Amino acid sequence: MNMQLIQTVAGLRDALAPVRRSGASVGLAPTMGALHAGHGRLIELARQETGCVVVSIFVNPIQFNQKDDYERYPRDLARDLEFCRARGVDVVFVPEISEMYPSPQRTFVEVERLTEHLCGRFRPGHFRGVATVVMKLLNIVQPDRAYFGEKDAQQLAVIRRMVRDLDVPVEIVPVATVREPDGLALSSRNQRLSAAERRVAPALYQVLQRAGERIAAGVTDVQAVKMEALAAIEGLPGLRVEYLEFVDPEDMQPVERIAGPVRVMAAVWVGATRLIDNVLCPLAAVTQVTEIA
Amino acid sequence: MNMQLIQTVAGLRDALAPVRRSGASVGLAPTMGALHAGHGRLIELARQETGCVVVSIFVNPIQFNQKDDYERYPRDLARDLEFCRARGVDVVFVPEISEMYPSPQRTFVEVERLTEHLCGRFRPGHFRGVATVVMKLLNIVQPDRAYFGEKDAQQLAVIRRMVRDLDVPVEIVPVATVREPDGLALSSRNQRLSAAERRVAPALYQVLQRAGERIAAGVTDVQAVKMEALAAIEGLPGLRVEYLEFVDPEDMQPVERIAGPVRVMAAVWVGATRLIDNVLCPLAAVTQVTEIA
Image (cartoon, rainbow over all chains, first blue to last red; front, side, top):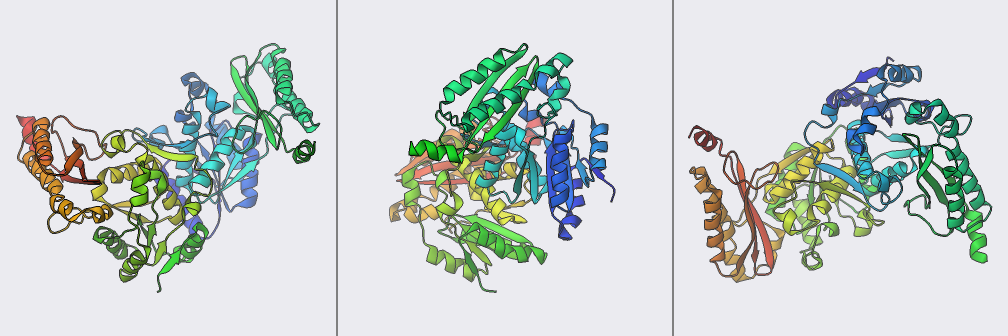
């Protein structure tokens, strides 16, 4: 089957109607384009698990809190289409802004509490824009399964909560972060790094890993581990920490003492580029030791 | 076919799956119970237009801004079920609060601008609760068509906007207000009126009608018509106006001069009971006359 490129909501619904009638399941990988192996992994899983794979490519203006970041966001549709074709995608949905927002958007989906900290604190309105556009895409595509990367762990938590709270009939599938050989998490924004910035960028993941290992080793004093991690990043040239927090993986609330699984989450500026990453410490064993002590 | 009474989301989805597979369309009339002929009209239309009629009965706590109003809201499930059965309803969905809100609700649907005035101003959080529960019900039932009464004109405008802004795949069907012979709009809250209150309550509709007629007659000075209407209501014993506004029917913004269709909307306290009502003045002809003048 040839890959279809569709630009309108009505066109997409028409294309998917016979698929659904045939009983095939639909998988959606929502993206902002500038596709890389992380997106490739979403597509690969969707390809394995569903009968019809839809990739949406839409740089969503309402989730950018800085105009500059929106304008500089990398775009390369020709390359993205080739990327999708090579991976057996069935439908690529590439709407214009005027198709997604034909009149002033008055309706927004807000997820409270989970968006108070981390990126939610430093990018006001970001998750409102994300939740709103994902709700729209889920309503347009009506997928059985939708695939999201764990690199954006707060986004994933927000989407899962939205789907649960609003009874959206879709399975949200989390997909493990894909990394460069040196550990740097794949991100469309990595394209913006200079050679020197690219060399120092993997430090983010190294520091998060080390913090995770300290906690896995039984250290429960979050503040001490955090100070250590901050010092390690700030000691490197060109890096500046926006946040680095230890949070519970569901509610994304900072924890003061380790008493269950935590996710170590950080946003770091590498020159003029903002990168995020995170590691999970499952930690069930340590919790019990702590409680016995 | 016997009417099914279903209390869980999973049960409802199971019951509707074969209906959908058969190709039959699904109609939803969302209600808070205490059913009357206004709801009867929603059901009747759904019965004519769709293959499977679902009525939901759920007194939604998150749309009540006053605990007292929530607790005093009339409930009579046995009567409601008989009402639905007599009208050929296929499925009645009656979830418990714990089924609709199994964990603290973090996600809310907000419709801006349309909710600034009228009930949105006097019942803070009301439309957020309405939009959120309707979004949930639409996701649970996935109806082809959903029926809402025009008595709650601001609610109807909010739901239509939400559906449009979020690309919800449903047709929202507006249903004309059903009235008592003396003009009083049917409302579950009418049950709370004393005999004396019931006698004076129809004045609300009479005043709205008179205001509408004045505008249809070409009066464009909204302020004058409004003052007249306010004086007429406040002159009656036991009536107190909460708001009375002339708004554009889509955006629900108060207008200062008549330059297109308007809806005259009011909320009035009759003793301890709050009633709302509205009339539409289409007004295309008058607009043109005004513009020529």
